[in-house]
Amino acid sequence: MVRYSKSAAILSLALILAIATACTTSQAQGEDAKLPTRVEVAAIVAPPQVPPAITRKEPALVKVEMETTEVTKRLADGVEYGFWTFNSTVPGPFLRVREGDTVELTLKDSPQARTAHSIDLHAVTGPGGGAVLTQVSPGQAKTFRFRALNPGLYVYHCATSLIPQHISNGMYGLILVQPKAGLPKVDKEFYVMQGELYTEDGRNSKGLQTFSLQKMVDENADYVVFNGEVGSITGDKALQASLGDRVRIFFGVGGPNLTSSFHVIGEIFDEAHQEGASEATRNIQTTLVPPGGAAWVDFTVNVPGTYTLVDHSLGRLLKGAAGQLVVSGADQPHIFSPVGDNVPAGDH
Image (cartoon, rainbow, N blue to C red; front, side, top):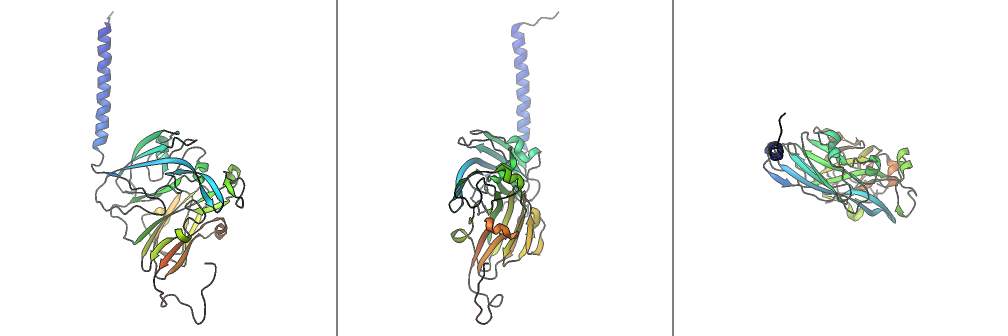
């Protein structure tokens, strides 16, 4: 029988640990060696604004930090709601990366939160879109990396149970994987998302409202809104452009249930990238955007005035689904003008 001394056993264990550590370190170094040498911190701006276009020609390691928060905010005049958010806005921030980038995303759950959260990005190739690696409890943070393989416009959302509740409460946003060649230059870019809210007390009730599971299951929304609240992009907060501007709207639907028929009254989309596709279709009046889907549209504003953004399931106007694009500039009577003593009027 072979006997080992205590010192020999300790030495053997130390050797095993050293080999394991060396292997782990070597593997980590190998993974790090594959990362882009250029490192950037993602630009984070609040909706409806969009980070500037990416002009570099090489891939980068893009670091993104996001925090899930639970905040009480305005839903409509005299109405508040307890939203669950990414970075305290609804929708969450617009993320912009380049095809081929490696994205290192850190998700933190606020210490003041009362529930766990996560993130599933439809731009991710991997289980759960990242959700399996980002389930975070209050005060916790987790980080993962993914390669942005496919260009396009993608939704992200929370994927912690009950998923549709987290989404309805405001946990959704968009990520653009810009193609290597970039997008055609425009003068203005805007970010708009549609979502639904289901409340216990109903649309006509004032004060702080709470989530209704039964109404969500029945798909009976009390509110259908752009960017998290009634009037979020109207009046003083309307989108602004000047005559002749080339305008791009990145539009997505958080849901969790309703498909949008996105339309800008008085405009035609010169190009529509339906379902967030790289390829465009032309001269589109209305584009369907499903829950968990996105599109972007480009058009030139040739006549001044106020243009209304709607879901053309127009009953939803009464639930809040309206926005405005205000175009300043001189009249263009060769394109649009009254005849005789005709005076502009109407609800548009």
